[in-house]
Amino acid sequence: KAMDVTKATKTQIFTVAMVLFIMIYSVPLMWSIVVVNGHFDFHEDLLIKQQEQHKTFQTRRELKAGAASGGDKAGATRSDATPTKEQAEGAGSAGGKHDLKDSGCDRYERVLA
Image (tube, rainbow, N blue to C red; front, side, top):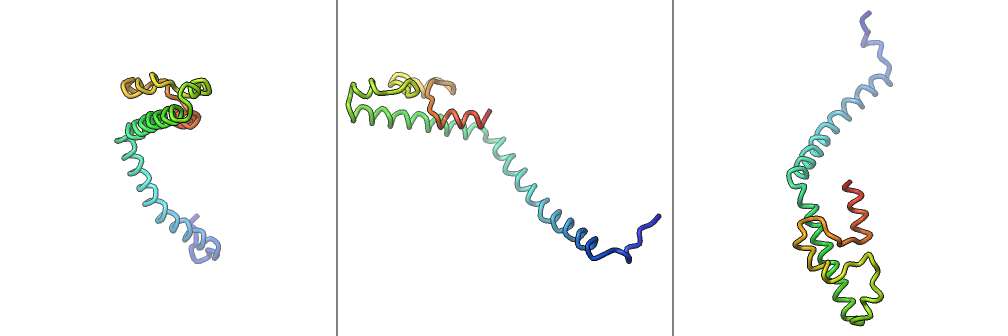
């Protein structure tokens, strides 16, 4: 049985027009997303390197702030989550995995996993 287009209601015509409009809009949008994801896949190590650099610099700032505020007292008030100076210096040469952990970093790693 063939469908008679002349008997289509306004709602049916509007629905077809909206589907076509959404397809015309969404196909280029999806292509843009594919291109951006391709760039992220190609440069996936950039985010990891930036995260490691951020952790190293943050640790150095915390160590400077601790040394400036009280010397040995800073070591006594430092929590277990804050790395020691030896851990901070070894972070650059650890090659990726190291003991520099903070709550923001832990959240970031959970997002990546």
